[in-house]
Image 1 (spheres, rainbow, N blue to C red):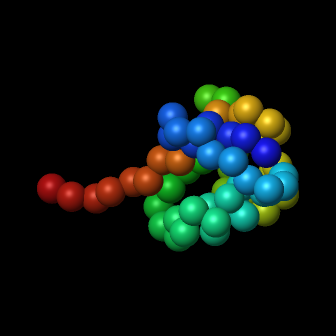
Image 2 (tube, rainbow, N blue to C red):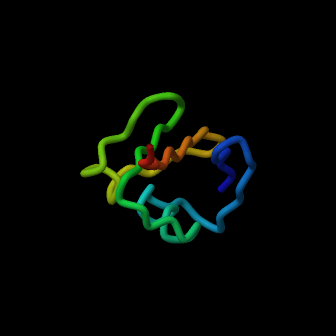
Length: 66
């Protein structure tokens, strides 16, 4: 399955949930949001939402600072 993640084409052997994609990419930050085709997917849906072929995902990580 092909997805565009933060502007980069990524290929996976099968369909994955958002949570599985984050695990494969080794992204474990709690302060983040995920948008699929410019629509935010709520965190409680990450374990069931499966993006489709060629979907565009944006993984936004929030950083604090001053």
